[in-house]
Image (cartoon, rainbow, N blue to C red; front, side):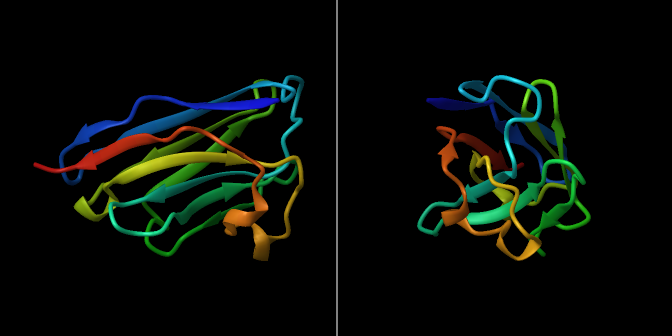
Length: 130
């Protein structure tokens, strides 16, 4: 059993910043046991969409066009944690953010696919509003 737990989100004004983190536990214990780790988000009335992902080893990253240049994903090998630093937030970034992980180290073309991830967190609400 692998459990992913996201940190609390929050209410942020437009242009503000917020950092989300996600920790793993259970069978994920041990250095760098997870392959690809990612963040997805789901806004009301919309499908869950890819935000960012990072691979084990070469730490290659992939971002959606909507967040490129504003968000940064990073990971900690020792704790198998993944973080998402969000800057220059916009109202359209409002969504529930989900952490996702898999033991597989995906090729770049597959890193943004929901079906490529086996483990999911419960989600955390991020609201960007004045």
